[in-house]
Image (tube, one colour):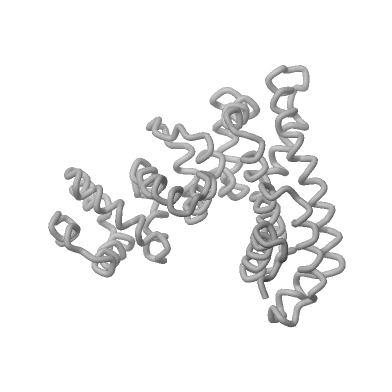
Length: 294
């Protein structure tokens, strides 16, 4: 089988590699292939390299979400292009991690979080995996924290090394996580110094989120999402994007992307086309002091 031949991977182009990885995404014998594949370091390296190169293909998304794919392999995939992407895009590490984690299902994210091989030591990756969880998976994860020493203590450990900007990004990109953690804080022991310290660290982002939550509700009253999404871009109410640009431009530039993500998840930004327009306009204003270059 070509998949198990080193010379095949060495000479394979993306199309050949895609066909082989597509086969693996659907085979019942994945574990058997991987057991042989991973005996040879060069084969393993080629496999992960093409997995990352073809990461935007539907077949690859199916493969990386298989429950029988080993967690160490998934972690290798997540970090494979880390340095190269950060250097080429001049991006931040959190942006890279968020991009790849978004390709994982809630169940696969939970598998990585609950893995006990000890290889998941990156708090930022842990946090973004948490933001990928659905309600059922959150319960499972927070139950594991409770068993390991307490929910608040587990959250303190995760957030302890994060700066305020990253904390903002985490909660703004997942408003549901914000609601869950807020509930946890309300129920926690306020006389416990660890709990108090955690509450104080999280409170600034909660204040910001409350402000934007109020804003989204007001916008939804004037510009109903169900109505706007049915219209073509040029037919939608232009006042909505004008208001969004005005509010976003009033923010410090380092917080704009987080708020854009929040508004997108809350459907005030209707689709990715609008999101791209807003992001481009804000960037143009930073560089040229005008939103659109025409």
